[in-house]
Length: 103
Image 1 (tube, helix red, strand yellow):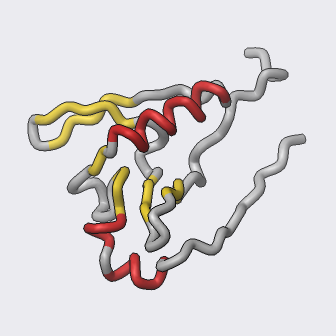
Image 2 (tube, one colour):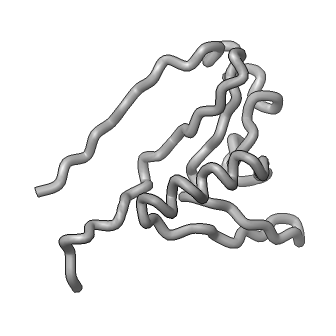
């Protein structure tokens, strides 16, 4: 049977980030899907990772009569911390394809 692993990482400036999400959130939504941010460099990196893991992407999202491409589950967020590194957050609903499963 498969296993689900939950991982927690220390991100520099995370406490500061919670009160300053407009500047640190570079991908996804932090306000219950009212707004989305899509950083093209971050999106391209995610697309490369998801292709290697054979995870379906991208998803077309329409918001305020604007349509854009979003890679990954809609709950996924990308953030840039104080040390200018990029982190992927909220991967709870991301599940790679099981190559042994046949339907």
